[in-house]
Length: 275
Image 1 (cartoon, rainbow, N blue to C red):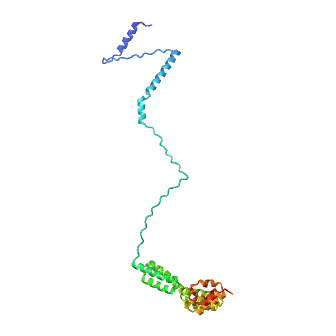
Image 2 (cartoon, rainbow, N blue to C red):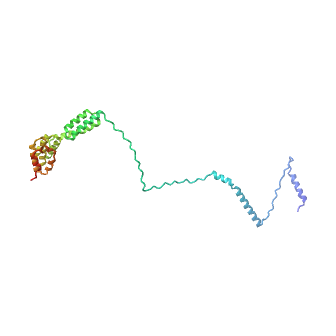
Image 3 (cartoon, one colour):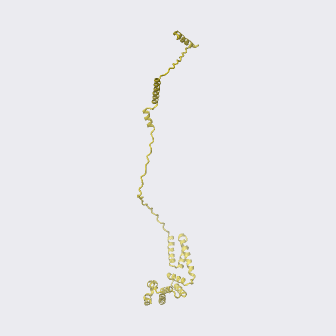
């Protein structure tokens, strides 16, 4: 072991060596080396326990305080799930409510002018002649209407259509039929028109082709009754009922034979029992 004197000399030598040229002193701390000592198992256990306690304190120090946590919770509100509204189930037996729809009133139709009203009146008059079968008279009226009211386009167009039909029917009538059925049909048309002379001529021409046709004799009797030829009408009627007795029922109600009902021979022909 060294003596205490040598220790002092060594300290003084260190102090002298730390002086600088400027006269300042530099103090050097001597680094003392800790002696390496061996720890016992109990010391190791205490050291480990101490390290665990220190790490736990650090973890507790790093955790935020209760106030800070409550502030953080207030600042960051959590998103709540939106409520899903479920539609009420429809009843199968429920019927839809039908509300009455208010109908808007239609605007009144425009009133025709004086010229339009006159054209409509002339058209109706010509159309009546057409429906009666008087095609010649209807043709003349439709022609006058078209010439006078050509500016009324709608009425004039309809009049042209009826005029074309009337002219076609007149052309057909001008062509005399040849067979008995065609002559009979034409005679019926003339009878309904009131053209009794033309009807009588057509029925007589039809009888020349079919002398035993009961319906033609009956038509001739009706035409002659309209003309006032009582004797010839009763003669034709008797011939018709002899050929076809079923015509008696028709003769009892036929208005074309009204002029014959006052004659007693008519009752004998029509109401007498068939032989």
